[in-house]
Length: 185
Image 1: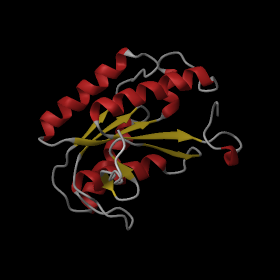
Image 2: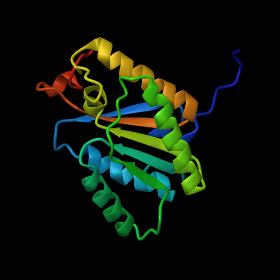
Image 3: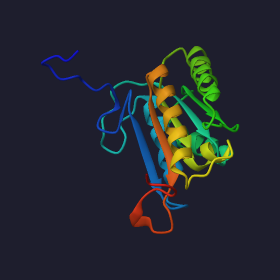
Image 4: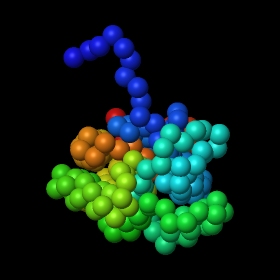
């Protein structure tokens, strides 16, 4: 069903995060990807503009911190204090997430629903940090296109069911010019 008019994006942060979309934040280890995502989380949840990009309405954030959850929590707290904000609708999940398994999709959706009930607002952004851990948790290999495809399919299922933006944090390979580590199929 196509209409003559364009379909408006439902931005959280104009030009960066929109509901129903996925983004990948890729850099070498130590490239400040997680720090950037922590700041973005506070801006989305707090209704703040982010690096000159307009916030289009505050929304809850669930940060799946598969690596260094304590550091993510400290960064979120530091940004909250920096902006002089009170409580924010942000939840950090520090447990293992196996997105190789389709059954995990319903667990993630349930986590998002529980966060919404706790926050009293909709979740608009889910961050998975890092992509490699989503594959490794299920015994997969990020160098295998098949394994990456399974994880991306399950991410798509989450996004469709929850109407959120999903931000994936990943590492570059040894040759940074070739992009994300692992299969490029």
